[in-house]
Length: 298
Image 1 (cartoon, rainbow, N blue to C red):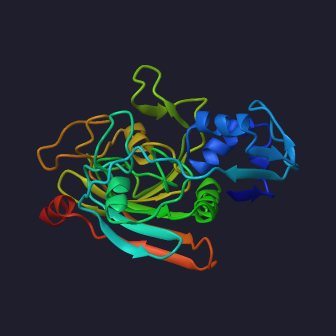
Image 2: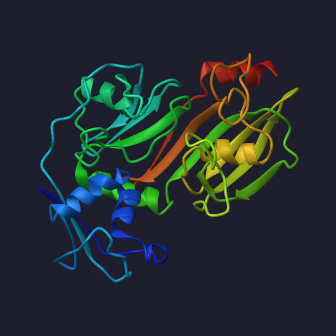
């Protein structure tokens, strides 16, 4: 069994339930963390705790990752491009229309299924449904993402995402001309009060921070670069909806478009510290053809 340790906690973690905190850090379901706690695989200062234990800020948390479970994912190939791979990480360029891992819709084909099909080993954290997954991009968003190949790498990457030290940049095409050439949106995001499949800017939501800059004005649209400081679900899409200028093709937060069959959003840049080599790594993905045609077509 692998053991991982958390011996440095950020001040904003204090007071959180341990099951919620670890679920957020490791990007795995809360009930899975609760099962780890029941099985005494998680301890605080070498003492067993309950799932309701609240973090004080001075703890050393030990997590024992159990032996691999049989994956529930059938190996199936998909049109992904592996940009980089070593013993610890695999960086993938994902096309639009493909999920990162199977979810509630029980998708048979995903980034994970394609990597397994190609013989890439992934970390056991998140197994059996989302092995190796430290972050996600939406099904209909294209671009670059990283997955972990072992538990130690998974944990080190997960901490970077949790502490918001990952560099993430996106290109999007929005459905109108923004009032300001650039700006910083700091509005909390949570579940939509009426549509549980969507998110919205709400008073008691999670902190969310997005920087945007218009890089090209088209006849009816703006091409915008986004920098994420936090990683909330649908963050860019929700913040653009909040500004009254949703992404074109975004049927959840805006309207369908005759120019593109999905939301016009692409993750073109991803930067992180290598989990073992302590080396800054940066990866890029070219703008996909459906968005490129709109940008050059004006």
